[in-house]
Image (cartoon, rainbow, N blue to C red; front, side, top):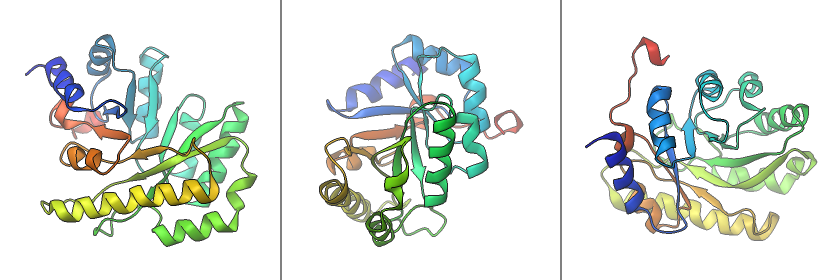
Length: 225
């Protein structure tokens, strides 16, 4: 199938109310432009410099999402334009996002990344760690960020019961934290990728991050670095 056919197949598989983040990392601007012309506006990247380069090359009404691990010294590259940062995993990062957003006279939406997967290589807050952080209240001092919800990456496994359990844990945590600390705008649950997004949707995901099912295999060669 062509890129557009693959995209339309994915779009048809999503129920109303679920937002598609087309994960364009390592793929060229020309492919993004093709999807843009087909109507897609939300794209996800995981490297700040690559995101900045694509922002400069492509229409400025694209809504760019930062979905990968974000180092504090790289926030400045994307703060002028990024719509949503999915991968907030520390107070230190949140403080820098707030500072850089203020410099650009912006408010940046963020998601707390939750670690529930078996792999230790995954980043994010343990649920109890985030509960303790929010109870401490330091985040309330940040005036240029808006906490919109949670993001997670499930264990890479064929055990669907495990994946479902992890997604359900994060879904329940979102409701708990919304009721305790936030309001109805704390409503975004970013979970599910190419291999597990149907399970994520069944568990209440409002946003899915799909790359290879749309773009095909990723290019990890020198040009993608």
